[in-house]
Image (cartoon, rainbow, N blue to C red; front, side):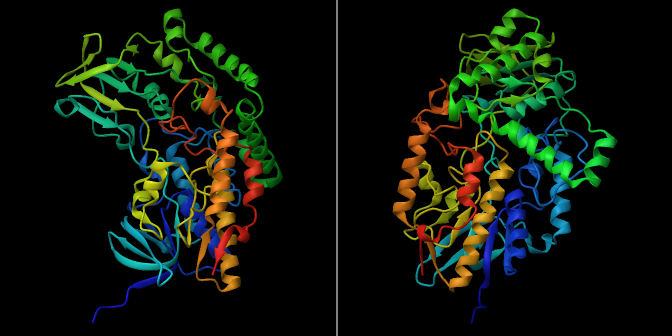
Length: 486
């Protein structure tokens, strides 16, 4: 006779900001029978995984933190990786969430059992069942590598920024950095003074706007500790500043001139070489790709040991990189700053009512309802799902909106004694039609670039094409009429 499977009312996948926040708010609502399945041996999500030099948030700290757990003691305007990780650990400890986390329990498979109205879950630590399954799997969790011929024959060191090799000494080396995304913009200024030669392979120049990062003053921290209203005012001010980037896409693209002028002035001020300035000037509308905040990136590229290479790579040889024009450049180390896969691996492991995976649906077309629910997946919710992230706001603001919606949905199910809550197909179709209609004139689709904001066939890959405060209004209360509740 086999032992009965462990059963939980709620299983959460991921112990990053989404999973920790969900557990806190679910507990406050009286849901104690929950478990967080975390594949790593520590919490923190992307802030645990990314440890490359210069790793920091590109949203000011007072906004990139839980509204219910403000921190008046941030040491800088923009939090560094270690400080953000300490923050989330502290919040998890203060709210006694750690006891609910199962470390080393990577999700291997999760399938909806329609007969029993529950989820059958397999993890690296065994099996369990759950009434409700919530994905808080991060969208920046898996490294993306370019397909370069001959890379497997390279005899030097090669690694991705997500898997930074801290044991490898770059001093005096010839280093090739492939990619100019947000991670590369942060680590390039850190390693530039250390290396003998740095080749930066740029496919398209990013828009770089002033970061204006600085250490906070002791007097500021004292004021924020003793005047909570002041901290709320600072948070509100940063919210309005970040939200204003939506003017370009959501109101009129002529607003781009204000932000582009700011970026062009910084480029003119920080890069002396006119030819290099031309190379570093983007050829698309700001906001079409993610604009990046930095005060150190452009000056680092204007140093004698740095060369920005715009020719494509033909192949990698054991000790060199060959360009498409035949030029061969010797390198000792290759560092990939090529970003992350758009779809978390976990999406391929969620199988809904008809047996198809969430990942398969996403590949066909990014789809969900409010980034929190998917038709055909009963008793399933998610954070930062398709159309649940904003291009002009802190991810944590969107996550907190989704947490409130999910908690209210589970409250509603408890009040009704419901065993099954499933999004209506027609509601999702109407929502996706609305997203397509609103996206058609956005800078993401019309700004002259390709990025992870768009699918290969040029559709919106999952950004919410409206103001974040409008999104919060829509997610403030669970709309049970949009669901089949049994």
